[in-house]
Length: 302
Image 1 (tube, rainbow, N blue to C red):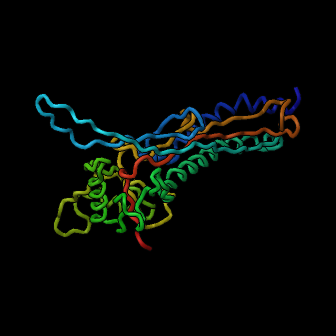
Image 2: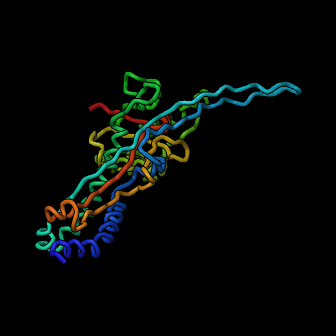
Image 3: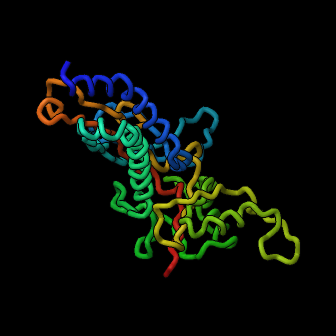
């Protein structure tokens, strides 16, 4: 066999399966706190995804003896998003394989896994900081000009501010004007506020109090540090997706981890013409907001 064929054959047999496994393992080890508050769905294709939110009914009508039932009108709202394909090639030469004794090549999956973790974290948390527009032409979060959603504060993170955010969410109403009594489950903060948030919801007594008052916020929400939040003062609360579907992330084919592929056929492509092996990482996903009522943003000046 030709030397390059032997080299690629050895690489294929010895490394591809283990490298793919390493990619998945290392990706699973990346921060994925977003999974706690999003709804995850398997997508069949790349078509624009329609998510229909049926409008709500109010209270049931009283029916008189022998009387007719009152008909309830209904309607719906559609939110949409389209998945995209993410990926790159990593090319390795025959010389690199022989000279490096495979040590550097074995690290490729780890580096790709880190890149994949960064990619999806930036995508998910960009849905917060980007404050996109919904189907009804309103933004997810009120921004000072828009006030229709009632999900914005301007207070620095504190016990009082956190209680205000929780109260805002509990007062959210359905489309029939009935209160939903939603409860925040997660407190999303930049790294700069992580220890403040942990103190607020972990202390048995009110932090800084001299009266031994019980801390009513203990365990109220779970703090999550978001490295992608670069504003050092803004923070968010969001509900558990089992209570209200607020955000959805969809993966084409249900593949929630990246694919690692290798082109190493000795008589084809760059393997034949350039003595190069190509690794391809591919990931197909998308996502978007489904409902504004399950999240509150505190936009702090400065």
